[in-house]
Amino acid sequence: MSDRTELQWLSHDLIEYRRILETNKAALAPLGDTTDLDRHTRYLVIADLAWRIWDLAGAIALLLEHEFYTPAVPLIRAQFDALATIGYLAKHPRAQDESLIFLAYSYIKQCEHFAQQPELVNELSGILARMPGRLVAEARGRASRRPHTWSGLTNKKLAAAGDVTGYDQAYGYFSGETHASLPGQYVRIVPTGNGMATIQTGTRVQAEDVESMANFARRSLHSAFKVMWAIFDAPPIRINSENPADWSPPG
Image (cartoon, rainbow, N blue to C red; front, side):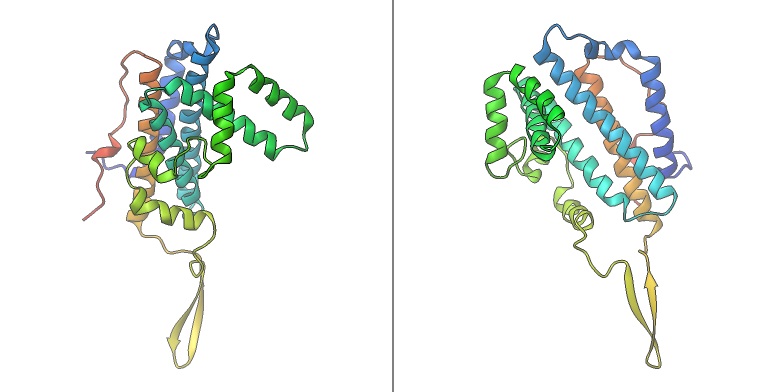
């Protein structure tokens, strides 16, 4: 085993996956083949999710390196959601249809969010009009029904369907930090005796917590890349890195 920390390995992995993509450009050829737009959508969605996870991993590494621990947590939650989504789309028996529903749902929600931008709304509405009508209708239906998610599933069920573990153990905390619902974490009044107290600001994080966050970011990155590589039917490659699944917390 290397004496590198998980945070150091995370920074290494970001560069390593860029290297792999740069030296295996032909593997991404399906992104340039639009002869079957429905099939192309699946490749597009999978690549987009994998790249999103790479971007998030880079941001997490940067925040942890500069000791901004708590702001990294919402990014880890975003990674968790993206990993659950890519896992779900990889396993679903109607993966192509679900990919189209996912994209249609995104365009529908963007039309709502950016209703004050008519040019964007017209562009997205035009794309929706060219997509399979039954799948666009399904996306609209899921948007209108509880739990109002693109998949029609809760985040917990989506994670289970995508074979992503750890929801019960961590997702509540991720959400609490993301939605600023964990008060008392940044400013504390600590008694020092004799009726006096000090004000402590910032969060206290143990070294093993930082390593755990970096390891999760690495696991997400490795898993997303493997899913994308398999769906693109890309040739076998050697990844010059240690397997993040081999890491365990100290003690």
